[in-house]
Every structure is written in structure tokens, then in C-alpha cells.
Amino acid sequence: MQYFENNPSPFQDMKTFHSSVPSAAKKRKLSDARFVTNLDIVESCYYFLQVAGDYFRQRWQWSEFIKLYVGHSEDFICW
Image (cartoon, rainbow, N blue to C red; front, top):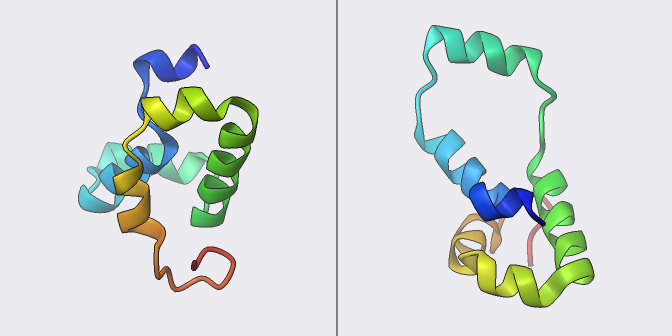
């Protein structure tokens, strides 16, 4: 949990990732990284809430999560 004291929520990173156009250097760096799916993020958030729900309910802006994932096109995510 200490990690999230100085870093954004996983879904905040996705919002930033989708809204920015990566530079050539960033594209190279991203191509070397493991691809994280929307399902990975949703499942991770679910596990974080199970383990420390009170902390993450207060720490993260869940309205951003709702905007990204309610009505999502993937069947496993849509709710």
C-alpha cells in the first residue's frame, strides 16, 4: 500500500495512457513492457478492495474507474 502513497491508481494510468500520444522513445519503452489489459486492471482493483477496501475507497477517485469501465465492450468487464 505504500506504493500508492506516491503513485496513481492503476486505472488513472490507463486514462493517461489512452489520452497521450507516445513519443518514439516512449513507444520503444512500451514495446519492451508487458501489455496490461483492461481486465488485468479491473481484477487488480477488485483484489485491492478485498484486501484493504477502506484504504482504497478513500485513496482513489472511483468516478474515473466508473467512466472507464461501465458499459465496457469486453464481456468480462462490462457491468
